[in-house]
Image (tube, rainbow, N blue to C red; front, side, top):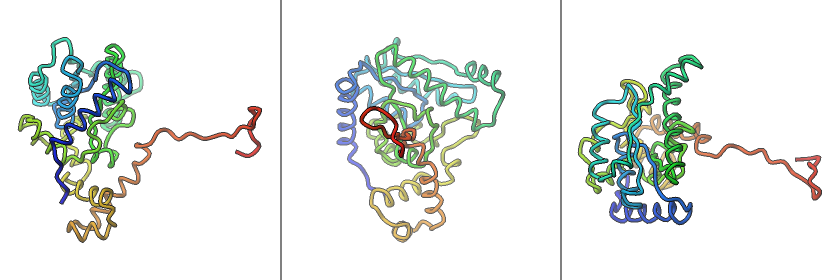
Length: 272
């Protein structure tokens, strides 16, 4: 139901745009990214290395005690495949950082701890970006951004989002085009912030259904009724998805600024 993309043209566009943004627009020297071994970050790693060169690409594995061993292995395969220089990648376990926070603040639930983990990882990436005169390259895709399925100021706290115009369905197409390992392409997407977590389980809908709804509603501008008629997806599922898009819109905006009016002499106006 969702349109296919021309992966070659899209990859070339993202590569050119990413190179221009980092080097010419931002006047930086490198791209820094966290590599989880999942499909999104693996695609972004490939595109970043293609855009900037493997010598300007810095990759960091930031596992915790709940990170599956297979994800670390998959991340290493990506690093090896891209021939990232030894000095350009590192692996840091974040358990000690999280334990320090929990010792100070007390332990929360899975969600609180998961958000803390995402923000700790982003802090590390920005630290490394400062050292390497780089920008933090994010790996969020369009499906998850529209659904608000990310941590505010965590995995969304990046400088640029090169694949945020691609639905998860398109990211899978891109992964096959780039020649990523089959295990990475087929594994169930998960932030792995707690044991057994899966993206589709939390969202309550599979990505094929989700992408169809989002594509027809926001790209084809169809009404909910038209989406249901064209796709055969029940109105309840469509309403559930679109309700989440609405409820999470604050996560996709910059912080609200309360504007104050001033007169010509710099005094606050009586009516703002």
